[in-house]
Image (cartoon, rainbow, N blue to C red):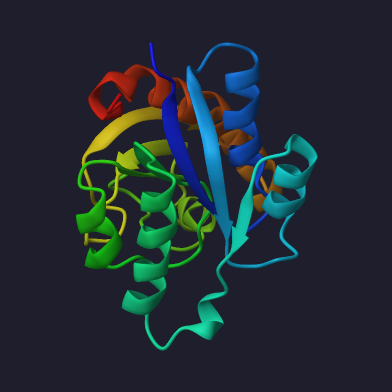
Length: 194
């Protein structure tokens, strides 16, 4: 069977990107990553890609007149690599219809809450502020509405009385690293073009 071709977008540390790579290497995910796009050349995701020998493009959002122009560049890069699906693995920019429409039902995000609760920035902080007893993470299809697309999978994480932002974030991230590659594998048949 043809490997799923995954394009990845990341802005930060890149731990979810690495979780996908490790799942591929371990044989849990039948995929290739022909391209990682980062918007910060010094981010951890870029360094991880270099370590794994995965091609990286730096697309600095500050060099574009608007979000649509940035997304047109992303579409061009991913289409040139003939990716089946694009994964936002910690991409800290709001995307536009330009990107969403280019990859309908094939643009995937991982979010650190049990959506629809705690959309947007600092979902872990929002959960702590709200005093919930359960948080978690969600893999979902990206639509024009922020963190509102169809849910593919979720994992629950208990919020402990002694939790800090760091401790809860750490436990949520551990679940993200399991959930994201597993969800990509489960849905690969939907996206694989070859």
